[in-house]
Length: 274
Image (tube, rainbow, N blue to C red; front, side):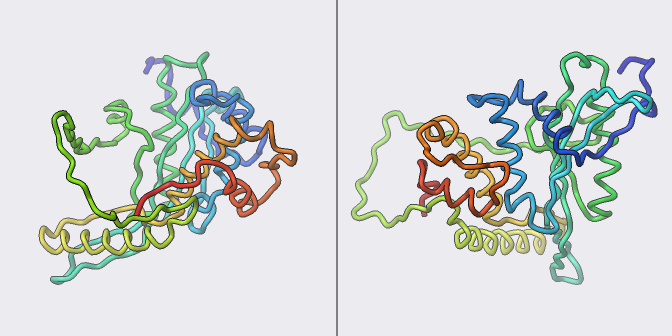
C-alpha cells in the first residue's frame, strides 16, 4: 500500500439504491459475466438476490462500496452474505450447539482505473469491522473464493482441501445388476439435504466429543444448492430459451417462486443422483 494512502481517508458505505448496486455489478461483470452479456449478468445477480438463501431470515445479502470520505468517486466494491450457522463446543462431557451467524465475503472488485493502490485490503479491513458487529462474538467470516494467501494480512487463514485422484487407466468395472438410484430434480433437494444435515451434525458431535475441539459450520440446507441451481437455470434460459419464449420471464418484477416454477420447464432438469 503506498505510504501516502491511509485507511482513515476512506469509508465503506452500505448500498441500498438499486441503481448504484447495479453499477457495482456492471463493473465486476467485465471480469465475471462468462457467456452472458453485461446486462444479463447484472440481472442474474438481481435474481440470485431473490433466492431463499439470500432472503430467509436471518440470512441477508449486503453490498458495500469504498470511497474517499470527501469524494463520492467509487473505488471498489464488495458483498457480504450473512447466513445462519452453527457452533459446537465441548461442555461437561457433552456437546453443546448454538445458532450463530456467519459472513461470506465475495464480489471483491477494484475498478481497473483504481488498481495498484491497496484499496481492496483497506475495503476488506473495513468490512470486517462491520461484519463482526452483525454476526456477533461467536460468528465467523470466510471468503467465497480460493484466492491463495492474498488476504492473510487481513487475518484470514487458508486450510487445505484434500484432492482425491482416482486413476481409471487399466481399471475394470464389475457389472451391477439393477443399480438402485433415482434422479433428483431441480429444487427438490430438501429431503436429501435434511438427511445430510442430520448425518453431518452427528459426525461433528462425535468429533467434538473425541478431541474437545470447537467446530463451526454453515447450517446445511437445500437453499444453498438451490442458489447454484437457480444460477445454472438462469444462464441456460438466457443462452438457449429466452429468444424462443413467446412470454419471456420478467426477472426484475416476478417473485422468486414464479421464476423458479417457470425455469423448471427448461433444461437441465436433473441436478443429482440419489
